[in-house]
Image (cartoon, rainbow, N blue to C red):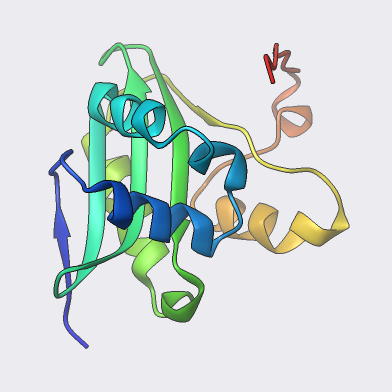
Length: 140
């Protein structure tokens, strides 16, 4: 298997649907045109490919100076554990070098503890460990 990486933002409906559905992110796939616009409007996107198959993606919203928000990072289950997520994160963090705050939001709970450990392996710390807290509005 030869995984390649790209900064492209243009994907087909099917490629995006297959990737997001593979990890169970069905809220995103309910409105594929909106998801494709969101990806296209993201400041930075890095995708992982196995030939013509989209197998991973990370996307970021940023002002380019003080704040960057990692909105999505996902890898198809059949390709997880092969370093693709690590490579996506490493490449994105290199692009974000010098930005004061890099943040992300993920699920809480014991079932997500492996994700928390993975983020920590990339130097992320919980808000509590940083002496801060976060707030959000979810318009579901």
